[in-house]
Length: 88
Image 1 (cartoon, helix red, strand yellow):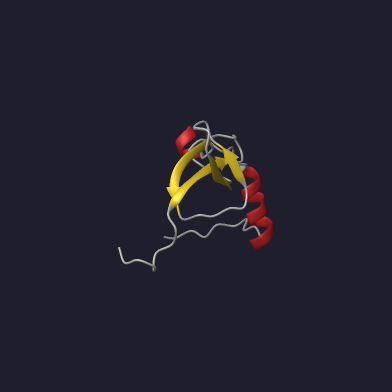
Image 2 (cartoon, helix red, strand yellow):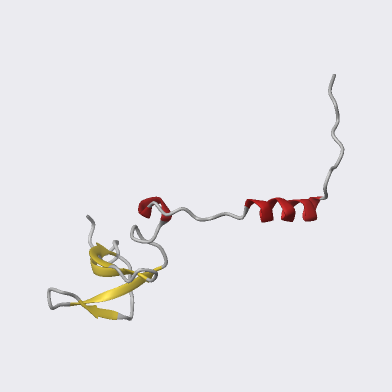
């Protein structure tokens, strides 16, 4: 790597705001907030909205969708067609 052209790559703790789970990794992300990690060192803390601990794809939790409400919203917005056209 050429010196002086790359951002600082350092240890950072990422914490899921929904579950509170955290993991230590290396990143170029910066933060003014710090956290004391289990190894006794202090690292920058970056709080994220979604991680593998809270994302529905990884947790297997499904989001309940109100399909009836979505259909009614569509009909209110674009109108309801009560007649059907027959194609012979």
